[in-house]
Image 1 (spheres, rainbow, N blue to C red):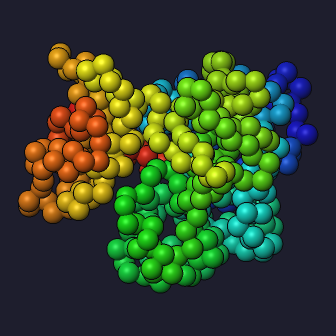
Image 2 (image 1 turned 180 degrees about the horizontal axis):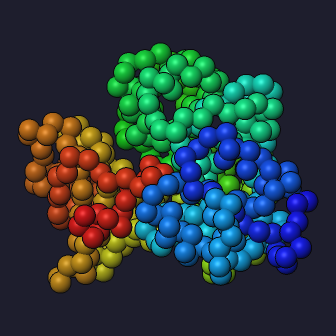
Length: 382
């Protein structure tokens, strides 16, 4: 284990640079214990804010005043950019990261020597885990600093991890997606028909569910990975146990555990051992004394033929408390559907109180760097 006697804990080095060989080498050294723990950050404004709030001991090799180390078992800290909450540092051990990557490779039946393409930000756990899977596969990852659909198709990689927006761009090219052995799809719920269309183009799609606190995807196609356990609590929230769990928050904030189970912010149900994610618990809209799960409403609205993409949020309302609001990207921008048409469509599919009372039509939903919808921005009206 690499140690610096001037620090009682393991030093934490922020690496503020695009993904590439140097970053991969730093992650490899952090996992095998020959280097300090790393905090990967994408260049730009948010990186400076993350350095200030997460207090690494170094930034790009330069010592920082006021920085603090991390517990010895921590290899990586991920600065989350949650869709609804303030960022916080998720501390991940090498043991947890390796357990997650090994379980992923086992489920995918991936062979040694098969190459992984990383075209997601390594500052997010989904991109980081591509590097860890490559390490366990005994290969150097193929790393693209930005997403270029044609370059992705021509990469020669066996496996790739994508968010729905990236998969949509590949589908738009009508390309042969059988060039990949596996396309892991996560980060957000895909719009209706996207997965089916990709499979028609030859894609082997595996949908994933997870978060930074679980070292990324720990449920594939609704079923937990090896050694991962799931249950639904009395509050409806998904609970996860297993060796993939994080070591705590960098901020010192209390982690949401129920015994040995990590309590997620997501509502779900289990049927026949398969998980169905219903939506976020903090996205429950209280309207007129009724509780509405925003994700459930969005799932219905997304099936309307005139809807290309949708997010559902609660907006303060003096009469209802909160107003169910659908933010819609129209399939045909010249003739977007009306609120009356949308409510009529929802009438037979949702309780009356859950049908949207407001419709906003936008050219595209705002996205966070990890591909999730920026719900905070939508609620703020931006």
